[in-house]
Length: 535
Image (cartoon, rainbow, N blue to C red):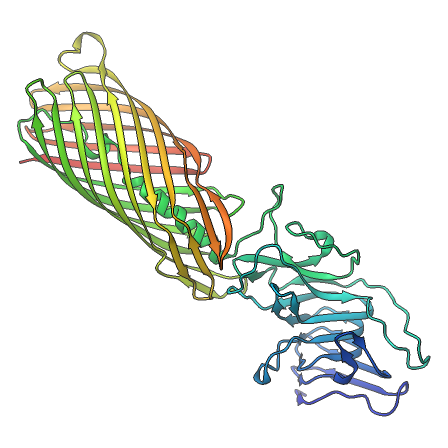
């Protein structure tokens, strides 16, 4: 029958003949302590009898104070986190002999190295899990460890032999975190022996003691693993970075093949979409992101007597991204406003200067290690940038003067962006902050194409290959004030094919497909399309 019992478990009679056996079965719950007067901060005191507590897989013992039992068979749940109504204090559950395959619910303060303790004095066997309380608000650096299970170090008074202690047996029990890991601050912790800790060094020769310590990845030196919320925050910052890169359009993407008409004012609209596959680093997990965007602009052309021309204009743009993380997803968008100036010469040389300001907005929702949803809003930053692109087209063969036929066009571009700091707090209490940082991307490339002109119509078919490298991108990320370094630096190759053309006196079109391969991310595909009209 199901029983719910509240109170203290106390051995009757006098030691060593005191015997007490409690069995919890069929969903029973025991709320209270056992021999609470026998447990002190320094060990066990007094004359001890024999107390045996047996818990089946459906039952639970809610321990409300530090307790001692001689034998504990736990195939259910023993919780040391109960008793909060009267003020939660950390508890010690001292056990002589432990066996079973159940769970222990525990909590503590990793930063202060204080918490609940399972103290196994004589012997242990079985396989157990420890359900440790997540604490995302803790300002825990990934260098803290906390003792959870102590084995064979506490002497047990021998009631039949005053002044003596009971002999030790074999300690063969194993413990693991439930479910697999724990979140402390912005980092993932796990349960294991001192010798198994990779991120922090725990000087404890007792191989039967079990600790809570930061989970580490394999690189040398090992690096701590961020929680799903911290990881998503770092990846959101990188998503903003990638969307900002989309705003760094090339001259061809913005203006296409400059028409030969006489109109002095031009309006244009550009559509684009694609997908990124971002590699993981020692500080964060991989993710992918689909995106789409639109830009529109207007410019005026000022022709010069020597055949050169100056274009000045402005543009607005908006890009939407959908980051997909390992344990959740997010939304990222970028809205930009910019100015540009383009100078072209009769020789085919051009120089294009762009200034822009971008507002980034974002949010995400992920699952923590307990399966609970954690969300973050206002994952926002701003960026101001400038870019300069130069290039020159060289026509090959006999059609150089008519600017028809095959051509090559070397290009170069330098883009700089300054991103503001970012600060927000997740629904679980994790505070995330990133310092402001600079991004400087250099690009060199070559375009090989063929241009055909038929009256007021033209068609330009081309292929391109470009090498781009991030020259900055060093970011300091802070999780509850604990700094984490990240580097967006890397390089990538971009290649694609496209077609531009003119139809009528003052209208042009542009269509391009491209892909990028890099050491930090791959752009699986991107499609660019643009229409430009003169009036």
